[in-house]
Length: 258
Image (cartoon, rainbow, N blue to C red; front, side, top):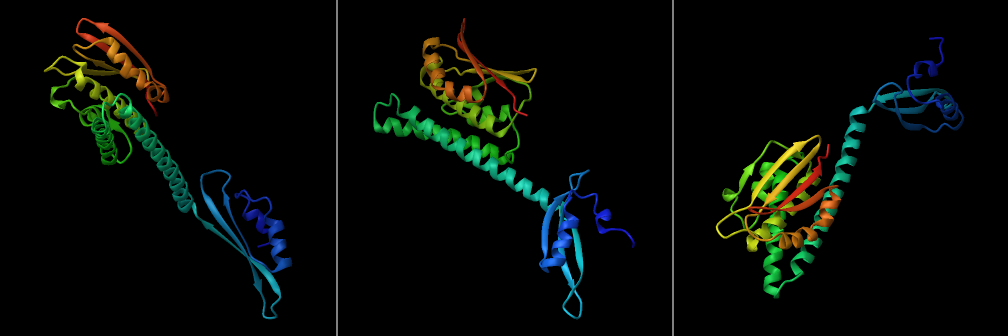
């Protein structure tokens, strides 16, 4: 009583409120606008409607302020999920195209191409299933190694590990990289009856993953790694091959996504 309405609404970021009220008086048309509070994360819906007296004249303006913070939060989450879904679809399509090219390269026959591509797609599908099981949040690298490899019995893989959680995009791409390494190892990259040794560690926000193949040659491994260069670069990673007494070792360093 005795105070302007604009004083009561001053916590809203609505400097034109007084002008809008006058406009409703003059035109008789309602007005609606969503606003944010100045000092917190709340959102409000401000609605101005003319109040008509018995003579159908405009006797006042009804101002309704509704807290729609929950709705605004849900809309922000929906936009975020939609953006993430678009990114995931693009990543999957790009990976499928890349795998098709990889399977076609050097394929001796149509049957060999189909078999190679099928194995790659199965590897990608297993990685996607793991991401779905974890709700597309984070994936432990140990589960990724156990799930994503093809042509190699996971029980025969020697692992030294510590718990490292990967974000979905990084887990998907790393799963595809491991799948390609496993395909090469299964075709003669390791000595018969043996399996690669996989180790990983965390160092100041960087993950180092080492893939050791007993037998084979660093030249053959280099050809496989060269085909993965685009994926490694997309993850901001660095790769290096070195010869050891047991065979070639590939070390991959990736910055962990937060």
